[in-house]
Length: 304
Image (cartoon, rainbow, N blue to C red; front, top):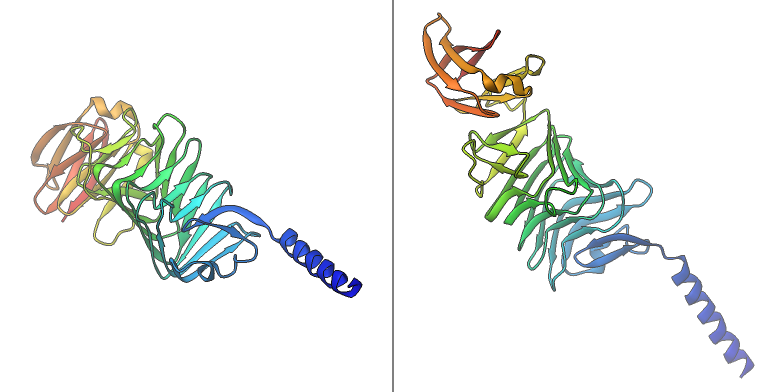
């Protein structure tokens, strides 16, 4: 009897020590909270996850390697509940879907980067950014987001920040808007290329057309080095000028220029048009080279 009690006590202590050694992280994948026991192979913990999914606590990195995540039972596909500056590293082609909730919830600052791509689908929001947090998409990765809302924050007044840095974002919110309730949209080495004339309205906290209509179709943000466009990057003059599939695009970085007319000339000096400036101005033009004059600033641009 004493021997049996000793064995039972030994088993209990061993089990207790094993459970005590397990670390729990504030990160959920397909509704499963990530622990140190499953971090190296998260797919092994759920039939809703396939491919390579792993978490490295030392670098705060969740790696998706040709992964598919399908969340059910009112669970988000990925929920960063409290890991500040979580990195989601993309390798290969990845797909993330929540059938009943958000594709990704940014509950702490999150960065998506890597050499791969990901398609994120949510029943309501593709990606939700909680108050006082940011989502950064960078390093030439490709991210596609779909939902009734594409990407949204809480109200747009709580420092919900979306930043795209030299990466591609394609986002569609086919019912309530593609990008809404965002406090700040930061574009670094990137531009909104579709729809033509789309802008971010800082007062309404959303992406809309240049005549103030909420955009529900796909919004595309791409690096300025996109080979199909010819860009003239002259932010030191107060504006950017570039060609977008036969449309002359002008973004203003200094409000003073918005009160001035945009004068358009052919390369040989023939007057073409005078346009009233907006924060983003779109002017369809025939193929050719043009001289753009705004105040005392001039620049050449090729429309093709």
